[in-house]
Image (cartoon, rainbow, N blue to C red; front, side, top):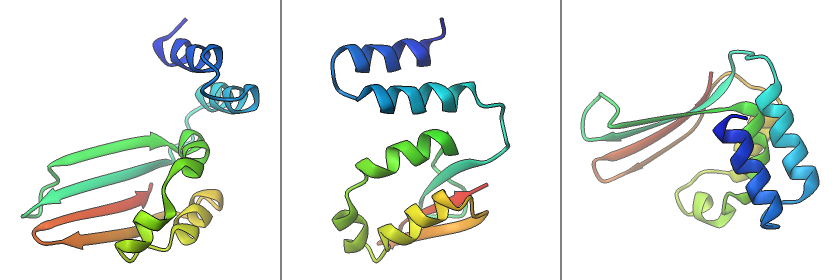
Length: 109
C-alpha cells in the first residue's frame, strides 16, 4: 500500500476525517491522471518562483472546505470564486495575492 493511502486510512482511524472524506480521497488517488492540478506559485521578489506546489484537483476539491475564507478575503481573494473555479475545472489563473515583494499565484492547469 502506498504512503498516501496509508495516511488517509490513518486519518480515518484517528477520526480526523469522515468515511465519506476518506472515500473521496481514495477515489481521487485512484483516478487516472487527467492532467489537471491546482498549482500554487510563491514568488519572493523576482520572476522565478521560490516555491511551487501542485495538488491533484480531486484532492484540491476535498481540501477546499478547509481553506479559511476570511483569510483569503483579507488579501482580496474571493474564496467562493476560487472554489467555484476548482469545482468547474476552470483552466488558468484563478487567484493572485501580492504583499510587499512577495506574490502568490494560483492556477488550475
